[in-house]
Length: 169
Image (cartoon, rainbow, N blue to C red; front, side):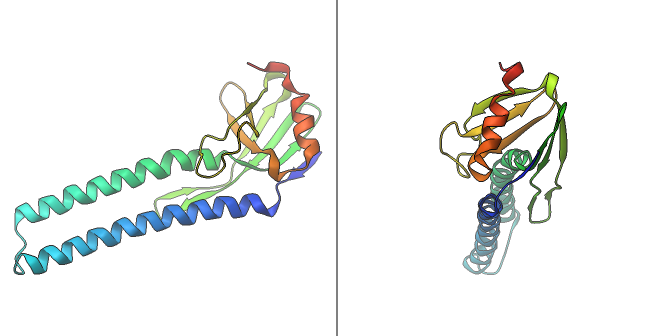
């Protein structure tokens, strides 16, 4: 049986990606304006001390952006957009995740054997995307995990997955 997420899930993920891009661009604009202000306030002379401060500021903003984007991007890249339930396995296609030019995770196809599958209801790890309590189903085995936002799928998918709670921990 094949289930596809409705259009709302794609919109939700795209809104989050736009917010991340806007944050990165805002950080770059701040760095640019700080350079311009230092240039004009410093009497058009930029010395080593000023450049060191700018590089430290750029590094700090870059690290903050990186630490916000990459871990959340891995979660978004593990969010299911299409799932197929067969007799002995589950095939899940995940959402791609691309933010600007340095984070580009393509869509994955994850295969779970039903005998090794663990099914749990959890809350979504990225609260700024989806925070409605334990309405997310997490599928895991020994090495893979995906998240299914069941509000964006047919109701029967949740029921079908919850009957597979063979290996629940």
